[in-house]
Image (tube, rainbow, N blue to C red; front, side):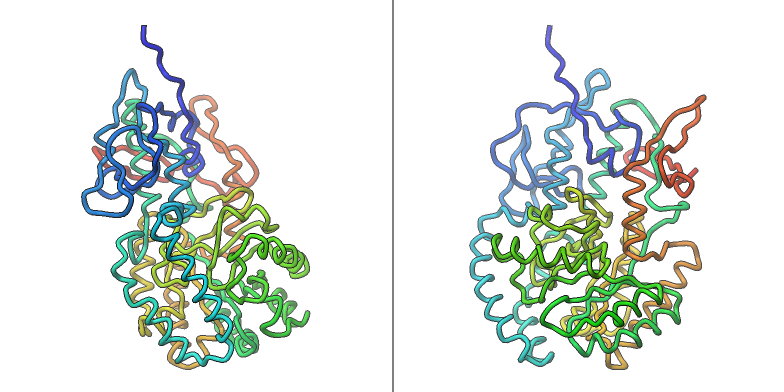
Length: 455
């Protein structure tokens, strides 16, 4: 008699949906390969990791092996040729990007160039910096993965995994805890990185602009080296209902260059976080290494782009949803930064932002922005930002998004992560702190597509 392998829990799927445990269980259809590489799971979902069958490509290409054809069901047991949690972690933590040989070789040269650039950056006017950055990013639109302008690979993969799980169990619909409070279709956060003295001096005016649209935001403040940070400046932000977060240590581009340097600096960063009363952190220029995040003493981070084609450090987490990195919740940046929009793409409309918003809302995700007070001093940029605020306010009025402070989004996602569904007298109910704001939804299998219904 053949022994049936023990089921494995697809924890990433259960955590994403907060659905009843057991729905995402599977068994591996064979021994996983020693090497990792790219493959597909259906026509849309790009994966990176080990598999038990098919070929794995060292880089992105059009003819990736589709592992969906290797999925099978035996006695209601789902057999998968890969570990979904491993693949999802590889995407979110950008291991698909950092583990390739070409990137490792390139990163040595990039580190040297980065150090030289940041050494002279304070002396360079914005037009000179703009030309340097445009030259460096001249081939950004040739990058095939992650997908520009918004990458939803993880979210598409989650949907496909839940769909094949329902099909394996011959279930048409399954309950889960909806992604946002009160059944909101999406969530929006606006953040401001304060880079220099002129930006710091514009923060009061920027808060006035935000208040005119009824949208509160967070200000990420550089603790050392860039400008004085008087207590009355921080108090004004807090007293007006905005949020203060910690932005790097001195924004010199070196925080994640060396592990030893990082551990030395992170002690001061954590201390500033306590002094500022900051729950959140964002690194300078979105430099990051998620494997080092255990040293950060913050509740959430704002440093990982969804797709990093126009960032100093490319890559991207490939999801429009928050996710945990150890104890820290990541609230990814899911739209183009204002600096990149204005200075690199030379676009002073909100059309690109509106396209990104629409793509994020299709997956009910987090719509997050960085708008620097330093880069909206001129009227043209300021008018563009005001148009964005008006558009977000209209989406909120129409009930299409929950506009929140980052700390509010963080608090909700943490509460939701502790909630569970329980069946009482044949009916589902939500248990856990914050349940009064939560809503039960259903994922419904319609042929080869998954749809959502909110109860």
